[in-house]
Image (tube, rainbow, N blue to C red):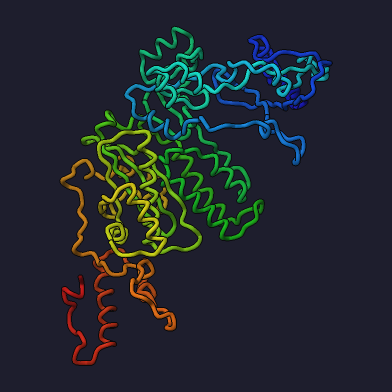
Length: 546
């Protein structure tokens, strides 16, 4: 590591300055090399570059490093205790509620609590005695302080401010509230000119714009957020392999799923590579490369698309709407906050369909479950007056209202949904915004879609909401595999063949087309069991269609 730093003298100087600053502030101390201790441990360390106006480089003390695969690391020997880290998406959801928002960085957040003297020898590390000479002998340091559990100190200073901070701090980043526990806040950024002016007068304002907030980029001037203001274009230069494709896809950070309709195409492409059983480092074929470069280009364009940071003016009086949908390729759900005539996307989640094929109604049911889980997640961050669930699958809606005994797969999913809500509404497929994230769209389609950004136009007018035509629903076996016959079954007879072996439900886009076909199949079955005098002929009757 020393020789690598020596190749860049400026980097070596910055690295040394950080260690000197830590020693000057009492975070670390130099110890006698001849000091004896019954148990010691030396921590390896290395530099990591970071995009920061205050700390362009940081030192990582790797407590997870092992001397050998069979040797424990320092972290392995510690009791980690319960996790205290707030959920990143939860903080971002609350961040989007405020009229005026700010972000700040806690200075040296993890270097404020003293370490017990008997434990300090387990935090030893080596550094150059003369940083200007990479060949100089090493000297030994150890830590005098330890990574502080900030939440503990906030609990000790109970107030409205500390309680708000407990909910809105992630590692050393504050995105709402203020601090009062002897931690200095710096790198202030806000959409409020007054707050920026105060921060500038104290020399703690972040002059960059946009600024990074928990992985997203926030333009404080326009008050918008995006996935990346300067996307990585190296995708167009590297040799396309399955490994590189996965690496590039993993670098796209979109925790709220704002650009899911575009990014889902990359996940579907990766799934295709798995099905082709390609090796990790084998170059993709020319055709696959063209497909991948097109997908990567679309995603690169989507990452710079701005979305309003503030999703509603008064979230306490807004209504939450969650749309679910599925296709043979993927399924997902998207949530919107609606207040009066204003609506905005809140978050979305999507999954590629399992390689083990499921019927489309089952995938639609899985999408409904995902929608219910999204609501449970959102409800921990945002308080809303009403919640409405929407699906364009009338088969799923019939399952949710059915009192019949269903097969375990359907029954388990329906039970989970009912724990959250039994009120689901029908949404025509053409108006369902979740349809976009189930099949993937091009950037141009995504950029021009107001339905994705602001939900269907009728959502802000309850009088125009579509209704579910219950009277037209066929409450027989929509998918015969999903209902359980209650009478005892004679196991000596051959098993019955379900209706789904005769009719492929996935080929019907409308119930009005499926209904008469199903009725004719049932008429045929009835006629084969009856004498000619009792057989049904002519047009379908109302009783056959209901």
